[in-house]
Image (cartoon, rainbow, N blue to C red):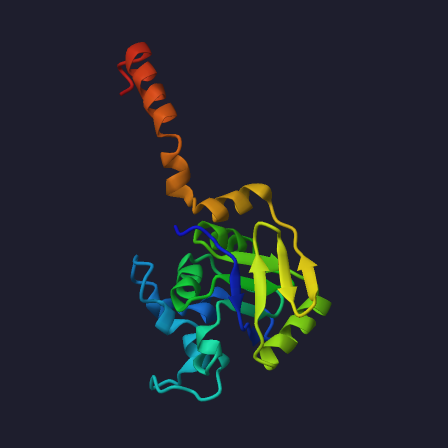
Length: 199
């Protein structure tokens, strides 16, 4: 997983509430176990009609939002079924930060495991940031300082220290396990000596 760095981008704003994981990446695209290639199907039903033809007007298909690294959304983002393909699709599209009033718990935790920073902000902050999307102006997210910079204002967001560390150091579940490789090997050697019938 890539280490998280400061993100500066024109944000894309989707004001809808309760966007579920099936809306983020529909079930027909869940057959792959690869993390790449899903970005083209992100929000598929909002971007394409039943025949697969593009629907005009969806924000992420329009310049400059098709290059946005920051997504602002309505509350309860990522609800519905648990599917890790949802953050995979967002990341593959280029989204590194999602700002919402609230997130579904499983989706929220899956974001950190895949290098995406989900930020919880109140509705007043959401409204202010959405204006920067409308005006096509950059905002900046600084993880180390835990703040969003916009214009001459800033917003400090709360974050679990361990999740922050994992993003900054690029540690997913596999990397965290590998960091303990020596301890695991030592434990296995001890078990081999003390209880050889187990291994």
